[in-house]
Image (cartoon, rainbow, N blue to C red; front, side, top):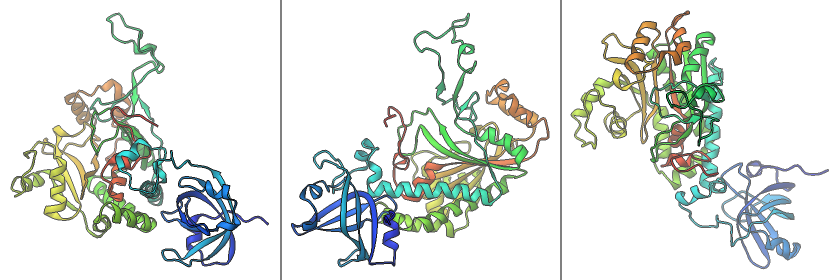
Length: 464
């Protein structure tokens, strides 16, 4: 009877020794002498490698010659207690098959340190490094935890459109979707592009948010969430911005701002707790290699109640702070990352939720407070990263929403259906958006958001 393949993770955790096993994976390192060869094999199931011990006399020289870093192997052998330090078990090889060679003169991931900048240039190979293997496993665990949390709390997963005719944020930084010829597009009588001739018969773009469509679903299903790709044509070449990223957006009928804050805090704590539980080895590696405070910072989030205060209170704190800021603070200005991090890391020393922002710096759909100058918005601020969640109670009053849209130059005819939600059975509701890559950035301790998504998209770069 043939032996089924086991993963490296399964074998390293196995208590059943002196048995025949089969493992397949990629060579990380190879060392030895003319009598015995030691091969470190990894298959992506764990950050750890399993050691394969090959008696040189039992294998053809041609086979061992091709066992180089990066090569893909199938190994059959005996799982035994390890004779050396660093691992509990190892495999005494009986049979080695080279499934795919990797020329050491050409393979770029040799046993040495590589800069993260260099690894971005070989994004098709960087998942084979310890760093990116760890990041991608953490990313998976977090994505799974998102769906698990919402499912367990009675939410319904809604797929919102990627191609849209509306701008949810009213900012205009959108990628256009068109099938019109770029050289000679059809024109109207006044010389403008005739989008009636386009594929959808109107101007369309890649979505910046699934929120508005999620509100539609929440007005029927009660509790919903979206989790999908979003796009911003924002020319920001920074370590915190991507042109394509994934967004998590829950919307809940009958929730107010207080409910929204409670949901955001519980949700974030649950995700961080799951990462600590499911990815202990990967997070320990990232802590040791990149950020010695990572694990402390993650525990800091789940062990502290989030501090809640208004934007106005925050501005007063910042204005009397002894720290000198690059950007001045005054009521009505949008807070910068340095301000947000000061509140979290220096003043309160815990995660912070700011509420009730000036209406002029927030989106049209946020519910106006009775003071007429602030809206029921909220931002959740984390150490090391600043804002990680932005949300609000939504404006459910038709006339107030119309007024805000007019003030912010949002076209009514584009969002007629959104307005009708306030016309037919309107209800208080609230929701928020969590940029998934921002979350992965926080949980992994990486410094650049381009290193937490497999194939980053940013200005002048759409490789791979």
